[in-house]
Image 1 (cartoon, rainbow, N blue to C red):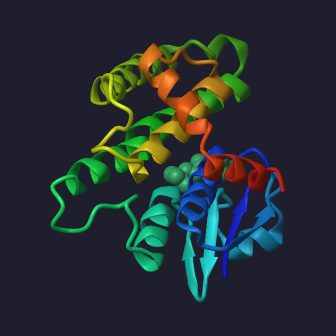
Image 2 (image 1 turned 135 degrees about the vertical axis):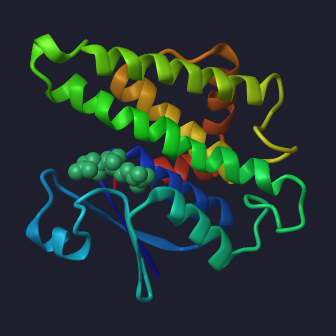
Length: 202
Ligand SMILES: N[C@@H](CCC(=O)N[C@@H](CS)C(=O)NCC(=O)O)C(=O)O
């Protein structure tokens, strides 16, 4: 069975739980401490979360986990088929959620929680916030007034960006445009999302 290690409140792990819940794929979870134990480092040398194991498979990138679960246990409407015109947009926005949004947020979180007071608003931090604003505007424009980011149904892109924005709001108190905020509220009503949130705390 899929086994996902995560911080008790790790938003990137919720991405993967949520995909499993939408697809009805069973999984088990284990909490990871910070700093990580030697036993955890032996499994995942990066010491990061989330971390997925599944019958000899080991993955420590959350987007790779989402793509793996969708392909290994699919097909699923969360990931359009290779001949579907929506595939490219789903892949673009799913990868964007971590390569751009998540990658920019990690140094901002480190500065916010760990930097000396004089460095908390330094040039890199100010530049990072400017880039985040551009990234979030891009996501808001992609959504427009539609119910989902791509096509007419939930995809990996919605799950990846919704959880990424959870880090932005929850850890960095960042602002979220109205259309994205309303979309997040609607996604949070999904039973699969609620089960994923509950699994996070388990
Ligand atoms: N790109 C990675 C980022 C993983 C990441 O930075 N995770 C954070 C928590 S959400 C973490 O483990 N931070 C502690 C560390 O890297 O030591 C992914 O998407 O899984």
